[in-house]
Structures are given as C-alpha cells and as structure tokens.
Image (cartoon, rainbow, N blue to C red; front, side, top):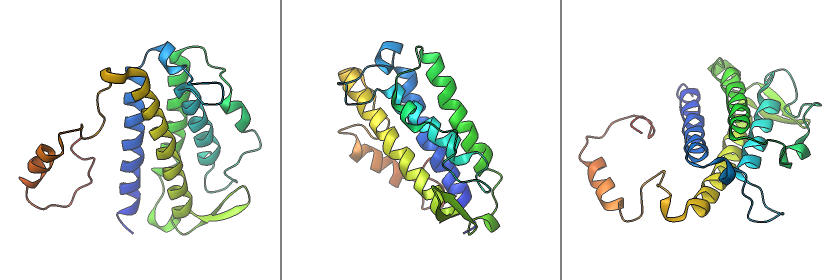
Length: 183
C-alpha cells in the first residue's frame, strides 16, 4: 500500500488538470451554456464538484462527509455570474481536498469514516470521490467539446494519433512511473 496515496494524489491532480484545461479554454458565456433546462452547464458541474469536495474533505477523518451546512440542491442552481467566481470556488474545493489528503499516512487508510452515516474505510472513501469527480469532469469535457466543436483541442491522444503515440511510448525502456509524470 505504500504507493496508494502518492498514486491517488496524482490521479486527483490529473483530473483537476483536465477540468482546469476545460474551464480555462472556454469563455464566460460558454461556461454558463446549458443544452436545455434539464441539463447542467459546466459552471454548475464545477460548483457541484466543489461543494461536494468542501463537504467530504472538511474534517475528513472526524466528521461525516455530508455536512449539515451543505445545500446540495443549491449546487445545481446557477448562482455564479462570472467565470472568476466559478474558478475561485472550483479551486477552493480542490484546496480542501488536497489539505485533507496530502497529510494522510498509510496508517490512516484502514480507518473508518462516514458519508451519510455509511461507514467507509479511508481507501473506500477516497476511491468513491475519485470516481465521482472523474465522472463529472468527463461531463465537463464532453460539454466543452460540444461547445467548441472543431476548435476543441484533445486532452488525450487525438483521433488518428494512436499509432504514433504508441510508437513514441515503446521507444522508451520498461520503467515504473505514473502515467501522468510526463504530461
């Protein structure tokens, strides 16, 4: 388990970077665009993620992850009016996550925490949040692609570039590193 915490921190950093790249390449108007009234804008998804992070990671080891002060329904209401407001709140959530997870040690991983009175080991809670955040960041990216259409720049291996990408990777010797180390 000695590699779990460094690996999962890198995974969170990777997904944050994908969200950052999506948020920064869109205009203010594009961040607030909704396909229709039943779907969320990128700004609303970012607001929900940050609200979730603030609730889950504040006093992570000592309090239930669903805080009494959290208003989840409000997270799906468009209350921000500027891109700057969205980015400030987005980063506030990530700062809370990193402030909680970076100090953890391997001895913390089997401790029990609660989310809505349901017990989780720290590993289970971390994995739950990692999956939740990657799911919503994928939504943000998809909306960004819909908005920018042909102007979207791939955040991974572009279509038609897999063969060259693999050739470049296999030129290197076998090694142990995280896939995000050279991004």
